[in-house]
Length: 369
Image (cartoon, rainbow, N blue to C red):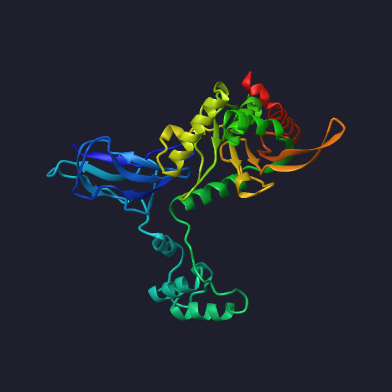
């Protein structure tokens, strides 16, 4: 029996994925359940397991190419078993995609690549607007003194391309608004030192408490303009990897203790960095936290992780003079930034939600109770 290996749907919003690496070659034996191909989604890399045992008879989508969810990536069958005809589901390369938009000679394409020229900006003098090498050379000459020559052109492909498209869609679709607050972090530092838990775990715990009280921040806007408030509180935490930003999700985090959150975070972070996150660990997020404090950042405006309603940005810990009980003290402080979808949340409830996080962190010794 012929078994199809298809592009998995790793999250609710995933529409396509990229084939990163095939672990088997055509003609090799595969065992059901063993990793057969690396899939790159908008959130992480994922090792797709073979759905059946047999021979990897045909690879339909080669490494580096994208394919929509449920597209056939390969066929597993017995050695002499007849295979069905499979129509290609993807473009062969970035150059083919470009060719769909513009007609150009091979020499013109080569010259454009060498100089970092977008061929869609070049006027073609040939039949049907076909671009020649002379057209590109003329464009370069005319542009000289306007734009500097490109030292290098780096295409957005694979994981980074999907991530770029996702961020762009979020910013274009959801009208972002931002509120920020400075938080007295002295009690959190004590808690961190006493229990040896990460600062990120403390923020996750505080966010979970605030989300339980301000449920509108734990929601999404549906296509028919209805606000869907989630029952579970699932917090995603952005992790920087060599492939780009990954957002593993802690499910039902409001039911976990601070120590449980810390242990789960360490496990997910390690899996994210080696590309071994499971499908359930990448999906179902209702709110996201991103921390740039370790990079010496004081303040930044994060972009919402669709289809969520908001995202919390965390800056670095800074010691500064603070007036407390009428006296000046040196206290640890952190600036928190909340970006929110203004279609769902107005400024006042967003400020109250961030204020609840601030209050919870400044009294985080209550986590121990």
